[in-house]
Length: 169
Image 1 (cartoon, rainbow, N blue to C red):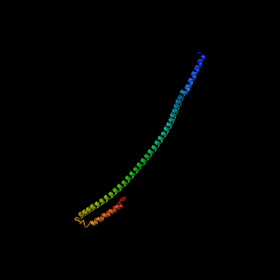
Image 2 (image 1 turned 120 degrees about the vertical axis):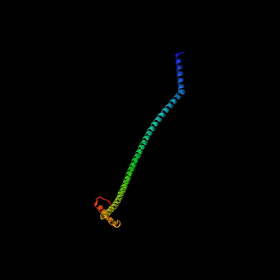
Image 3 (image 1 turned 30 degrees about the horizontal axis):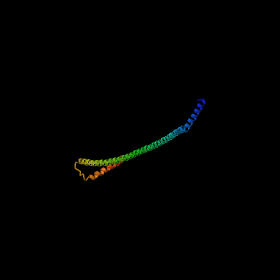
Image 4 (image 1 turned 120 degrees about the horizontal axis):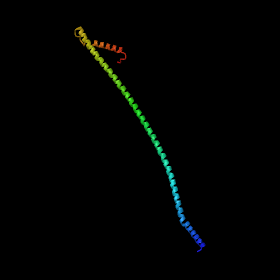
């Protein structure tokens, strides 16, 4: 064989092989490459979409946390206001109760003062009768002179009540 025929045959084989490759092998390779490019592009688009969704979710979560903090602050403020109201209410109740107790105590002191005066008047009257009996050496009728002793006691009481500054009847 000769060199020219070898070159021609090899050229023919190369052309046939090129044609077969172009006709049967090249289209599936191109289709696979295009499919792969499409999948990569879809994956990148999904990744971008996921990043955007993540950013939106983070913003929404931050907004929810912000609202929750605001509501918590409002709740704390309301609780503080209510506790202050309860404290003020307790103070006013305690003050009113203290005033009532003080008024009751003043009334009790006034009643005790009156009882003590009455008892003292009776004792002074009895002592006066006993003293008068001893001085005169005879017995004085207590019933007959009771009015006189009571008038004397009233006179003493009215003069002691008026002359004592700051005394309350």
